[in-house]
Length: 205
Image (cartoon, rainbow, N blue to C red; front, side, top):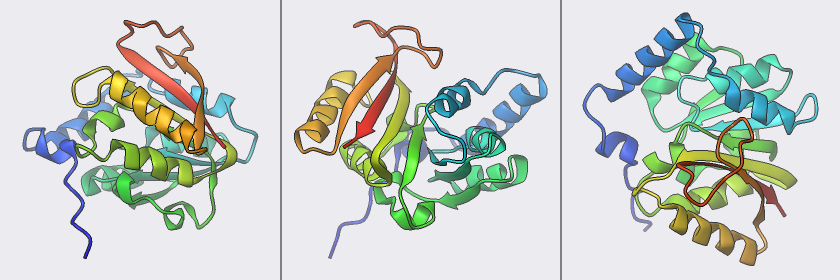
């Protein structure tokens, strides 16, 4: 009998009401005209027209909807049912689902691999402790050979970049994926050893 999946930090290390605060925060930013689509522009740049793409940890769906509007078949999954409900209401078009990324399967993306996975918004630091490598494996398994997985998150103690790089090296050693490039922002600024943020592009082998 398998052990139960641990609860993500999104639930265990945030305050009550955090999900609704997050939803309202981004509704307010959008209403104010804030530019929230840097990740979407980055992802679209990597895609052929009409591609299949997964927004992994989609939150309220702004990235998934932007890619849908650009002509792609977009899927959005998130572990938080409240966020998925908000995504369906605020950013319709993509196919959404409530999914723990450590349990992601092809069924969650229409039964066949996608061309690109985007995991933005600091999702990796809100995973359940100890599931990060498994999530990386699941994201790669949902991506076609030759496709890409893009991850962007901040430096911090929850998932130190040193452990992240060790997990990425393990993926490469096992012939799953390799690091293709890394930036410090979604606007292609170069990554430096002391950068506080990393946008990493993996090529699935």
